[in-house]
Length: 267
Image 1 (spheres, one colour):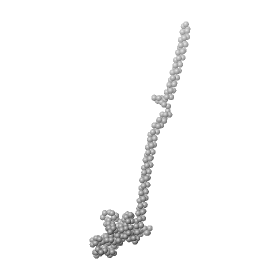
Image 2 (tube, rainbow, N blue to C red):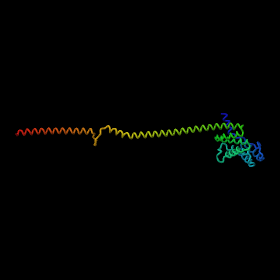
Image 3 (cartoon, rainbow, N blue to C red):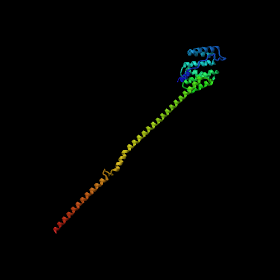
């Protein structure tokens, strides 16, 4: 944990400002160097806005001054703090532009190395770990002995892996959620289909029961009398008619016999 804290502190630390006399160039001027010394003194006192003014004056004396450009970039970063470098009118935007130009074209390898290193720090603070890794590698190409760049490179690689793992876990969670949502939707649809089938079966059941009941009951004639009952009634009527017919025949026989006896007496 202590090692990690030390690495993080080194991430936030900017490389010290260059003095004009560190590696003087042929086209430097006395005024330029004086402004750079003045800016460095103000920078060390953490008077970064005043240091910025001094560095800009040095660039007015020599627009190609790499030391003045680098020191101006560091003073702008100090004023911006952790602000987003992509926001409008932010000192970080100008600082990033200055460092990019120095990393790409600075004749002083040490300035190019520190430009790469500080751009790596900026990218790391923005959690842009791929870019931070590239910048630290650029610093190491300029100076393979830059231990801070090497340590920060390793830390950036670890943070990138951690970020990738988090993204993968989130993707897996999103995928699981999508699958669960689809399963819930399918289960709901299956339940709706099952309920619909049950309702249709219930609608059909009374008619089916009625048909079954009609099959079990004797077939009825028109008027509500079954065939069996009608047959019984007809049989009863027939029996009654036969009984009446027998009575009439017996009565006729009695009358005929009585008539014969009367006629016999007359004879």
